[in-house]
Length: 354
Image (cartoon, rainbow, N blue to C red; front, side, top):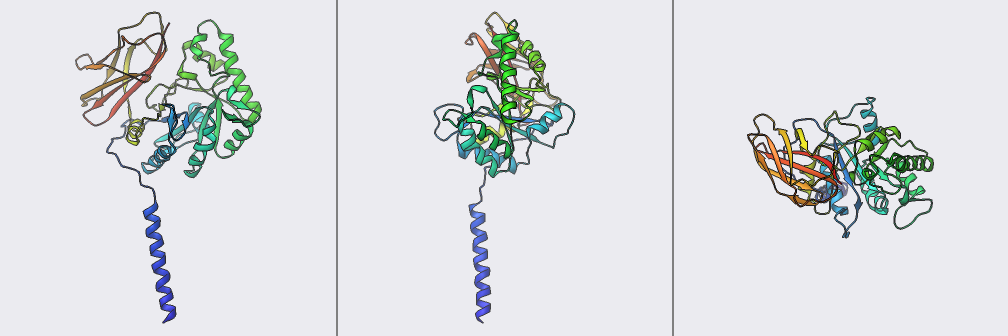
């Protein structure tokens, strides 16, 4: 009798433990957001994972954790940078629904906050670090060589972001020497410090021109990353890889919309991608091809953090954006169309006003 009671007690305790385990498991909200019908490559771009941070680029630890859980729950496959680079060079294939997680600059919190969360989810990530944030000794503002070596051991890839976080578009078209110094010295410094090959570059501020693109290739990079919004198709331009920027204001639903977004087929933009112009356009024009059977229900546009007025001309299949408030400088613009199929069709590009 005593033995039976002990057995029953053990079973009860086991069931209670299972109930508690299930009750404590994390559940992330589900959203009825249709995925892209065109296969896409998602590249996510973060800067700093920090609770209560002062900047619009600071994503909380809880939100970052939820975002990674959402990726797993929705069947996305997080890939290593090396796999992506090999794909670009035609040496490897990608899994379905691939996601590349990237970080820019080299904040200390990339090591203290982001790395443990990624390790918990068993996901790799890529850090684009500029030389001035990399020191031989540990320091408050950035990362040390020993910290980066530890990150490498835990699945991180460390890639280039110039020496001084320079706006490379300002070197174009004549100062090739200055731009090459920023890119090549950063590349060599990381390679020598970490004994690793550096083949990827993230343009600081996402700023580039056709000349910068050519110089990046000459400097030995096989792939370069923007901060132009939108998904990549499986035939991306190797020196214009789009990334979804993540911000403090983004909800988990915002994140889901970004990851599930569909590429918007663009015929032309005025100004064109990476164009340098000497005037301030009152309007920007984007001629598009909306998928057959899809009706546009809403039109959105923004440039950096500024929301702009935009409308869609159904007859001309044209997005017209009011940019009278946009001044000089390098600008990243995004246009989005919400279709009656519930999908967001997204296109991002950049241009420079001198």
